[in-house]
Image 1 (cartoon, one colour):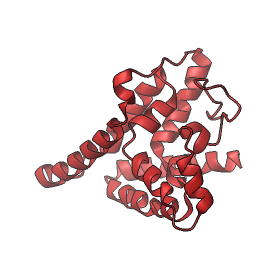
Image 2 (image 1 turned 90 degrees about the horizontal axis):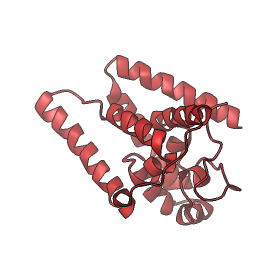
Image 3 (image 1 turned 90 degrees about the vertical axis):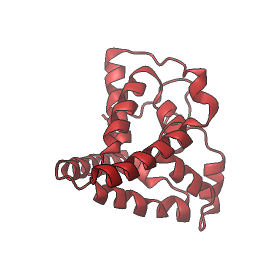
Length: 185
């Protein structure tokens, strides 16, 4: 199963690159919008787990950190207040709207978040970005909590233990703060 998910991640990363190089990131935004159906209906964050190019990149950074034997630092207190994901969502939407209206083109905001995620993951556990900053994961997480067809999905979303343990389902037996083995193999 892990191999199939990794193949899906790589296929979606390739699709993202193709759409980016062709200036068709609106198609990616549409894919993201459609992906919101899964947490709403089934309580599963399929986009975050297998589609998101940010997550795919972060898995590669985790693998690289392991090879370089880099340790995670604790997240800064200012970032753990719980409001930054909302702020990043607002900034993302504002940049998108302003770029469409002022520049009359779509600004590739996802590239900004790819860079931020990669840099944060070099220093902190990937859950720092996923849980505290990611503007794309926030709607996915909120919709999973109100899953319309899956009581199990709602319960899992309410009992959220961090992205790696809850969405990637890795590191279940790891002590808190330890880097789960979720990188590409």
